[in-house]
Length: 95
Image (cartoon, rainbow, N blue to C red; front, side, top):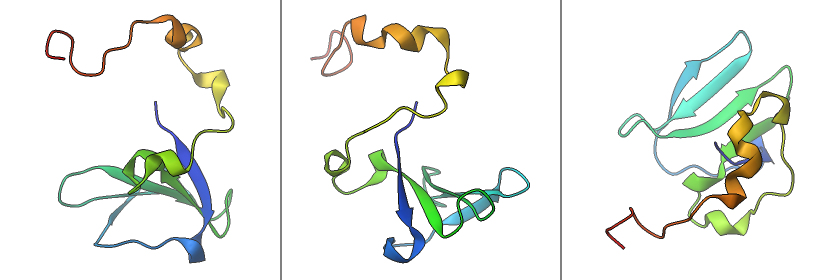
């Protein structure tokens, strides 16, 4: 799963280079060419002038907590009960 924040293109500041992949006719995904981390998604037809930013890649991901769930029609069934599963601060057995 991934958390996105939709921002205006002119408000996005990027340090370093990104590489682009045409993931669909109008969709473009930008990622770090050094490590492969996904960073942004753009679609000038569906989201003109906007950039979807993967919030986990921000300097402070907690600055933009999720406010809504989008595309829930396609989520896998087990997502409904994620909040019921055990949570570990680190890999189990290595905490």
